Image 1 (cartoon, rainbow, N blue to C red):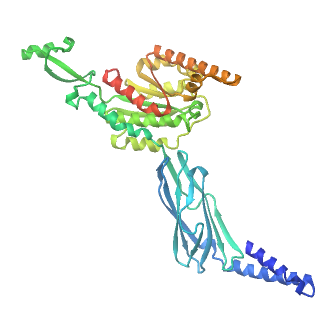
Image 2 (image 1 turned 45 degrees about the vertical axis):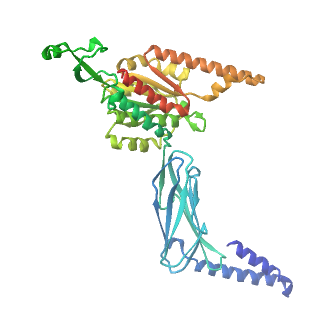
Length: 436
């Protein structure tokens, strides 16, 4: 029974003084309203005879808007007057986008399209939860309702990483072309992979003279080099508890994913093979490099549902997986936090055997709150304690950085918005120097 039936009963109550016996008036009015309600319920279109289907976007980048539509097909012989609710998880940011929402009228045999616009607020898979159809009779006194959970038909929208750092890719590719020597005016980059022989000119390093080729040509020839290609770049994402810490508006893991995507895009263009691991106390993602044209799309789709786990990271597992999977010397970029407890007890004991075989880069997101605390004078006793804790945290980070450097590890410590370009700059610098 709807609110209209209650209003009808209330209106009938006003006529009670006209009846010879009030109880008789109540009985008659109740019977009339009940009869009309039952009739209205019988005339409502059965929800079970209304077909439902979906179409629309399957994926959207975080910050953009997707459209997913519900199609209702009235297969009954009665007109459908319905209230429709298409419920999604709150982080999907769903809202109806059709006139008269959320009520619809569909004649027998007709169809109607009900689009919803979704602007997600979180990365990952966002499912439709429940599709509710409430069919009213012609008098609006009663309704039939069907609620499907999970939503029928099912639909999941995958929210891809924002990947804001892609705006840096053209500039990094230009630097890469300079290093590879394709821009002749800027000269060749350094490297350790043999390129060509050319005649000696004043200023060349005599250690580059190829004496055997010079003897055959009766001229002094020197070897030229180019940066190595077909190297292995392994991006390792720490998805343990430290990756769940929010830096600004997003978890630390999101900044690491953004940096890993930019590095992968650049390294694949450089002809290097890119692999990716996501590990905490278990391997969450293991993706091996493939064709350059599909690598970035595979990475984005694979990393979209990845979420931090509130567990301690097993660095012994990380080292074991890298050493087992990568037989050749590779560049290992570990995205983690410079925390003394986690790295001192977990990473440093296994670092010597990892750094012996591979070139290791540790990339960490720097929390700007620590820097802000150390640059402003305290006003209260609580502020003084906070400033002291910030100085201690920064000191611990410096000690961890020094310990990593003693093992030949390159450390990149940057704010979230600068981590991606600084990691790629480190990669390009090492490539130009032939130290990969």
